[in-house]
Image (tube, rainbow, N blue to C red; front, side):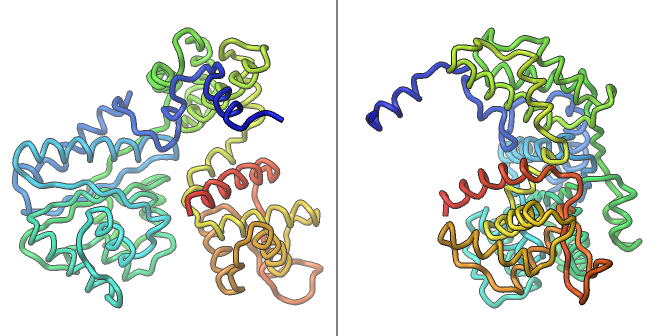
Length: 416
């Protein structure tokens, strides 16, 4: 039997194509943003008044574009660098990034802002309005201005109440103060037409005033992004421009792809992992187009688009999602009833030592998954007696989904 320390040491020393594969992770924020320079310029023009005339106006802008078009990373890079410039000019501005997939109403948004800033703000028993007012008082005391990015804001618009939308979009109509300390970047998927369909005309006019568009990437743009990341992720000489160009042509919108840079980076990362495995077996020394072909035939666009969303789901919602997939696979039915799903979910909880949530909470998770567009639900099915909630998936390959879920569930349990 091999010694544990020997196993670990041999794995650390084994050859790899990667210098640092984390540079290909979705959450990595690069120093360079190829082909998003114009969006950075637009954001600077919109928000420069915060530095030049702090507190005179609350600036709002809407970042609109499909998944993988660089909205989130552009917001983070802009906000981080903008706040540093402001500090050098004597204005105390902080950038805060809130994901509305996790913070789904004004109260939880205000709490997340407070937590990121490390402000001493007791929030037990306070309403959203009271929290907002208390937050503004603390900002006045600290002489602090905020640039608040609300990511996946389209999800917030879909699931929130009209009064909650009003409070966040028309913040200073609710909180009437002389000094405007909060400024907003709303990050949304889709098109301006789609976003305007989620709100009333008056609220829409607030949102649509300052729009920064993010178009899907063309092949040349995808190549430049991959090239920039590959130079810091891989050892020199293990991946050629031909491989990067091949991925770029598969994904670029001008060649029939969806222009999703995240997908391109995910394929590059997976191809590198496959080359790593074959290197260990003595069958490869570099990343090739064959590795890309193998990955692309295995990975599905519908699944890749889900990966970011899955990371934001709580553990038990992930377990419910896995239970749905397993129930459909095992029954062979297109739609499965809630009762079957709950039975599989309880068994999954038992297997990993987690206390199962009650029926109401499981139903809430199912409805949330439906709102996110991950599952489909029906209240009745032809040929089946009685009324129930029946659940199915779209075109997502279930075995691949379960494999991804197992990895994410394991990761979440490790950090609990």
